[in-house]
Amino acid sequence: MNGTSRYQLRLLGAFQLTAPNGQRIDVTSKKGIALLGLLASANSGERWRAWIQAKLWGSRELRQAQASLRRELHGLRRLTADASVSLVEATSRTVRLNLQAIDVDIRSREVIARSSGEFLEGIDIAGEESFEEWLREMRISLADLANEGAVNDTSFNSVAAPQQPN
Image (cartoon, rainbow, N blue to C red; front, top):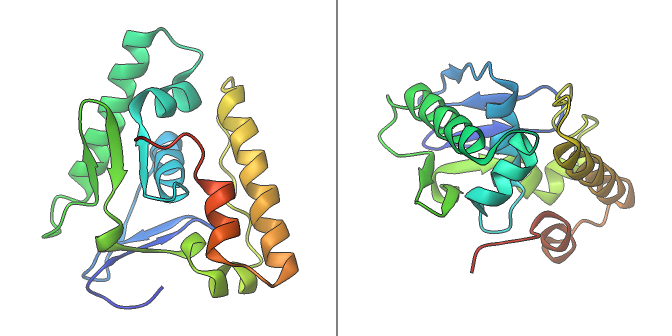
């Protein structure tokens, strides 16, 4: 992850999001951080809204889950409003991380191999077992890839990209 004309997202170890101008963006919501992790781990950076809602708000009624996702998206947009390029884009069906505008540590085999940090370190979402299961699987998969020292895009994509929009 280098360059100052793009966002920088660190998901291994302590979470950090940096704007293209180098200023740190303070995402304080656990679910906002988790949302960025869900999107960044998708092969295309895109997930179905329903899939995200099931992971982060599966214990809530559908309308509550939909409203909660809208609130998190609004919060992320507000935090990144000063940048000239949109970080997160949404349609009525999907949410997408703009991979053309961001460098993400877990998308770099070199960074994964060098990192000693855990994926979404310190993030847990009580009562959302679907998210916790996904998080455990991602942590194990990324740790295995780092330990192997032979990370390749194919193995990462097969781990990170389930349930992609068509």
